[in-house]
Image (cartoon, rainbow, N blue to C red):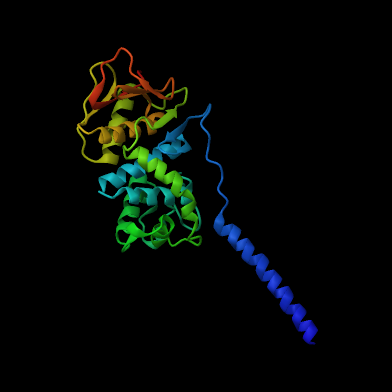
Length: 286
């Protein structure tokens, strides 16, 4: 009988070990490769590290960062927010998810995050995340994954940490701490053109960043944003490139550097007066 009991105990321990290993793998969630820009629209971000995203991911990341700045959140908060959105949705604005989870941060209407149509708005979702993070006492000193978990209460509390490095690279670029750091390729057929593209681009910029002065460039359709701070200028420039594919942006110029949709990269301006005091975006003509 003792031998039989020992056999049963051993079998139970073996099953428990297998189950535990399965839970470990589930919680670890082996990370998929991020989309690589090529023929399809995509972006490469280089700022003391390198991250590749598709056009949708890049636009959402830029919006999350802009909302963080508008809410006067420190850079660390943007890192936490981006790592959370990486883990929850891979920076995609999902229509659904686990149970009633929705959007970039997979927030749940049943848990008080808002109505479904509100949560599907990236600006609303990012604002709610930052507001919740601010209420976590001492979040600034926490690991990225711990701070994120305090807000999200996920079944996989350590999973957010795997995105910390990528999120730090994106934060450095999108908050203007790097020059010409966001380079995107766009589709062959612009989503919008002419006055409609310029109007949508201006509206999106103001929704993300708040009240901004903008004007129409003299030489082309688009917009110009004044700035006396190079760091702030690069925030706007990188945001404009990040949203190039969905707003028909043909070129972005700041200082003596210019990004073009044709080349998909930043280069020195040739034959054009540098613009150190404004960021200029040109959209595709009608």
